[in-house]
Amino acid sequence: AQTVTQSQPEMSVQEAETVTLSCTYDTSESDYYLFWYKQPPSRQMILVIRQEAYKQQNATENRFSVNFQKAAKSFSLKISDSQLGDAAMYFCAYRSREGAQKLVFGQGTRLTINP
Amino acid sequence: KAGVTQTPRYLIKTRGQQVTLSCSPISGHRSVSWYQQTPGQGLQFLFEYFSETQRNKGNFPGRFSGRQFSNSRSEMNVSTLELGDSALYLCASSTLGHPTDTQYFGPGTRLTVL
Image (cartoon, rainbow over all chains, first blue to last red; front, top):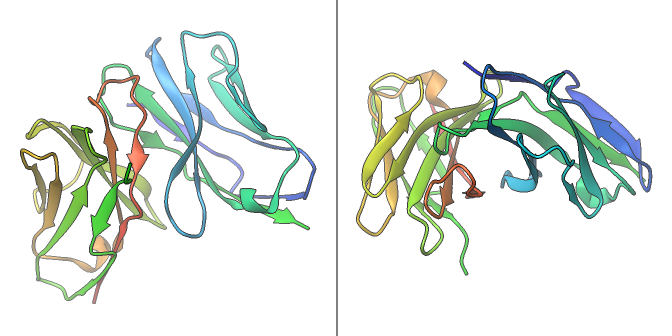
């Protein structure tokens, strides 16, 4: 079974600075998908970024980018120019290519943005 | 296009009762998945429905069940409620439930069992 680990329960960063959230995962599969979801206080999960394992190029979405290290099974999220609206719980998630829509989530990292 | 909607948003039940939660996916989406979120266990996959058929199931007891209707709306049912069933129940939908599809989440139903 696949597992996802987020070792940082909480992180904080000054507004406008850069922060990196860590995620490692364990799988024996070679083809899969990785995601970062954001859950603000409203509790609605929002997709931040996704990465296909077969793509070597790291995904980017505006101020959000990932560092995907397949051999190390590491998938970190970098948020540049942090904004107050980035404050939320961030979840790393894994989805098998064969497992239809089942997402395996990490425990989450609570990100605080200091003004 | 309207997002995923879940009803009710909040629910209070007592032990032993049963509860039904509803999820309406984004128009055109045929796959609906359910997740349970608790402080202790985090986010856990319950099941996925596609075209009215359960396609995948998580490791939950048989008290947890679901179904999907021909219009893709889905319901999940929990019978004989226990205190540990208190959680945020999230529903997510995607177009065809293909591995490359993006899942869109609803706002959740907060269930409290007393």
